[in-house]
Image 1: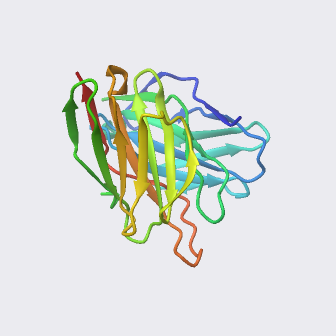
Image 2 (image 1 turned 90 degrees about the horizontal axis):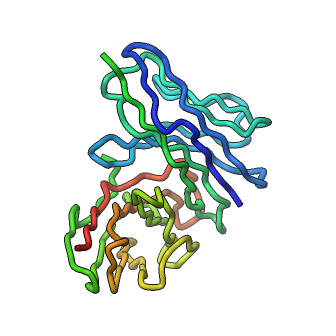
Amino acid sequence: AQKITQTQPGMFVQEKEAVTLDCTYDTSDQSYGLFWYKQPSSGEMIFLIYQGSYDEQNATEGRYSLNFQKARKSANLVISASQLGDSAMYFCAMREANYGGSQGNLIFGKGTKLSVKP
Amino acid sequence: DSGVTQTPKHLITATGQRVTLRCSPRSGDLSVYWYQQSLDQGLQFLIQYYNGEERAKGNILERFSAQQFPDLHSELNLSSLELGDSALYFCASSGMDRRGRGSYNEQFFGPGTRLTVL
């Protein structure tokens, strides 16, 4: 069965520093997608970044980058130049297999609570 | 703003009652997903609909049901509510048009409905 593991329940980072949030995954599929979402205290789920299993380049979106190591089955999120507004829960997720043209659902890890210190 | 709308935002009800949560996907998105987020279970996939048809089922209780209407909005019905059903319920949508074109590598989440069962 597919599984996402986030081993860091909570992390602290100093403002303006970079931070890496860990994510490992388990799947027997060759084609899959990996996602990171941010959930601030207000509760909404904000999409950050996506990496496809066949993408050769690591995904980047502004200050977010995904360090994809396929052989290790890891998809760590790197946030550069942390800001106070980055304080939130961060969830790593994997998309399950597609069904006849539609995207599959997401399986989520338990999340990492990031706190940015001024 | 993700473009996915959910109503109501908050819902407080009593055990044994029945409630309906409503979701409108982003314009053009055919897939709708329902997720439940609770403290003990984390974020769990409940059910997916694609263009009006059920596509996949996750950890959805028999007391829960859902449907997607011709205008693509979806409703999640929760009945015989128990204290443990208190959670944040998210709807998400993703894009695949009726000709099977387009493959958005994102699932856009609505703001959620916070259900409290007393």
